[in-house]
Length: 253
Image (cartoon, rainbow, N blue to C red):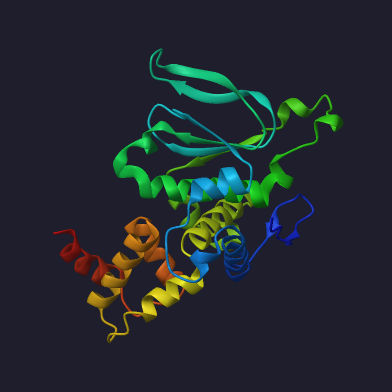
């Protein structure tokens, strides 16, 4: 199994650029599913998480209002907070180390694309952030009660996105890294470029919208995730978000 090497701060937070994460993502895909690095296709994110990485998976209601989509549990614990819709109150459940918990709301048929991105996001926490969130039980101290051996991931990440990067906390950076990795493994950069190169028509807002939808259907991701990925790869940066969204209405009909 491929094991990435990357720099870390003294507190365990990785130091990773966009390109670093894209390269790591492609190396994982190459090792897990070589065919997906020859022909653009959807990566089996469940197989990658469970069969390749050996992660466990569980489904719970993580909140009363759907604010949390996923959670990564780093250590064995009996204190995983969930919401019980029957009693209408918060409860605790026991989970094993290296367990991904997905909110039950993402099991709806129309949530497959969001489910896939959330899985990729939680996988990234296991790969990159175990050194920060996890701890060695054999080195437990009286202060271990303060350690939170899990990370809950909110549906809304716009708060950190609106900050200047100079103001980002370690948590902001790790959430950004998890989002970037999910994009990198679900939409490998070289495969996105290969897909777009197969439609060499003259660039336009309509063509950019067409490329977005091609990424959506090929890699089974959301329109938002596809558009962000194409912008990050400088493939549709000549066109405004507004112009592309206007053209996307054509494909929604």
